[in-house]
Image 1 (cartoon, rainbow, N blue to C red):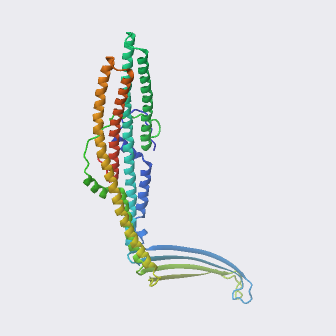
Image 2 (spheres, rainbow, N blue to C red):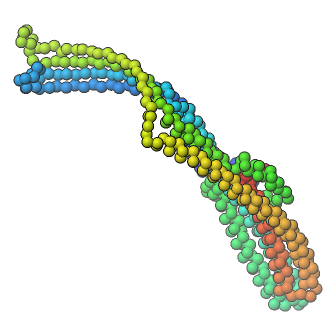
Image 3 (cartoon, rainbow, N blue to C red):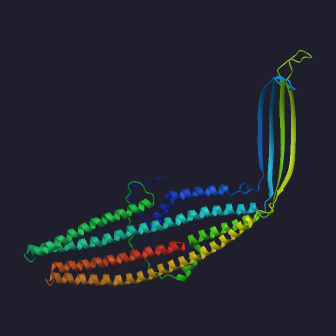
Length: 428
């Protein structure tokens, strides 16, 4: 069901995650796949229970026989109605039934893991899309501050001009600054709307949406314990979980191949009944009366057992078992390789996180210097010691420093989300 929002509401990260999980179509499809796998996970499908078949047949035949040598000459009718119930039960197949049942159980777990993997990816996407909105809004706040400063300078310069203390050159410079900041502001407003639409698309919100995002872009300055993260990664990473599940299925496949080396024993039973009708379309020469329709019936039943054991197949079964065992070795190699790759990825992300913390710290110092420089420049400009161009240059330096700090915070948030995604759990 699509969600259409008309009233303005506040959007938070928990709310976005809740809406995304509720409305995501792929999660609903994954739930259906889980139901299919659960329906298949039965002893009957594994082959433990007997099969019972009921068959019935009804036939009518009319024959015109003009063969002089035939015992029955002329036209006659033969009809039959019969039914049969047959049961077959494989009582021993080398342990195949239990192995197949285990495979069916793992298939259920696979579908559940697929769903959880999709949920995990969705949460990462929602998390990053949500913070992209906050990031774009934070850039908008910086631009609004710059525009406000430019307007104040323009108003101040216009006041000075009214008293003959300024000139057209300075006035034009500040008018141009206001126009430039206004254009940047409009473009940034568009970027905010684009980022919101990206989030709405991830949440499957269709139609007009007018959410506000009151939260400000911020981080908690936390130190990361790489040893703890690697432990969580080894237990919770979805790639490793998937590879382990594949390895479990292939171990069962090896056992399944070995069952072909053992005999198969089955028992069967049947019971049937038949009713037959026969009539000659002629008169009895002894009595001159037409022949009667004659009926007969038959009952039958049987019970038996059978065993089969392939003693020699040219080594095909041995080769299949060897191949299955080799596949097990490949699975372990894949797991070790994935562990190494994921460990390296985690090291890189943690290093990036630490570097970005340093960049953020430097950005804080940079913004303090830029703010102080802007204050000094404003005082010097009012004192006529610097030109309007110099003032604009310092204003742009402040803008660059402010953007650098916002970018550093956003980069930290994205890197932390990638760390959480990699290890398999999102921290609260």
